[in-house]
Length: 100
Image 1 (cartoon, rainbow, N blue to C red):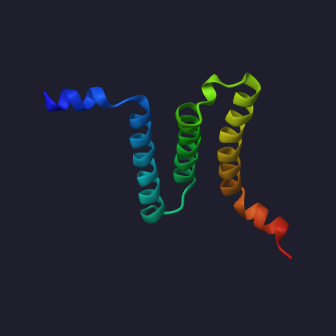
Image 2 (cartoon, rainbow, N blue to C red):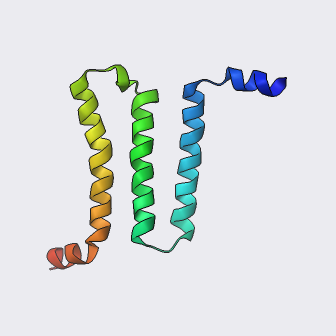
């Protein structure tokens, strides 16, 4: 009975917050323990995009905003993880280009 009452008292904001904390903790664990690899970078980038979208929809409440604002924010949350992935993918080339 107590369990059902607890589950009913949770709303989507609470669930989203707990989910974001779990994903952030898992990202920190992976960052501390895993060897650097492109697959790990991809997982982190997907989690960044997912977390950004959750924050946009549930905490910033932009799912009810103007469609142009929504598109700009979604672009921000998808472009930057893509740039992070591409930077890791082409890290040696970028280092050679920017070396003095």
